[in-house]
Length: 167
Image (cartoon, rainbow, N blue to C red; front, side):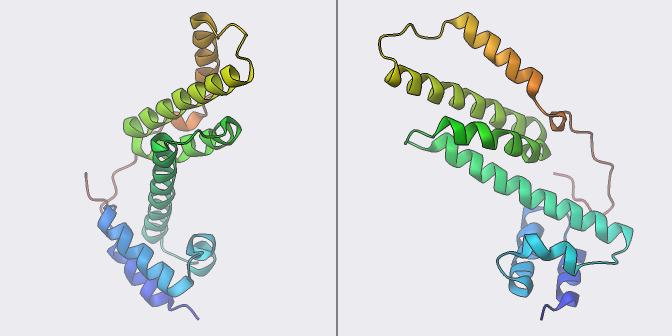
């Protein structure tokens, strides 16, 4: 059975830094197991408003860092990535990477470029005798992608929280 007091103490110590996030996650894993992120909200109920805000922020930070790591693995992969997989994952990654504001948006842009490269390479290997995509088509495709971006790109500035350490 989970020791909810330990979880609440770890949450009380959370201040928005990577170190305090790692400390919170370590306690959550110890108390709730490896799938802690799936059950944390079920276990920590009836929190005061500030505690709920901290839990929400910690969860979002965790999800954003997980998305960051996934995106970096795609970007640094020496092996080709299935464009369908990347195309499916980009909206989810974009949502969570918005947490990192400009840096997150840059990673999403890099992913979109990687997707374009993967699609081009796949098309050229499948259709070696066909004419490659011209620059006008690339620009049009990029513009369509820009229009389709989810509203998470327009992240509102977070209200200052007394417990949140400024970075």
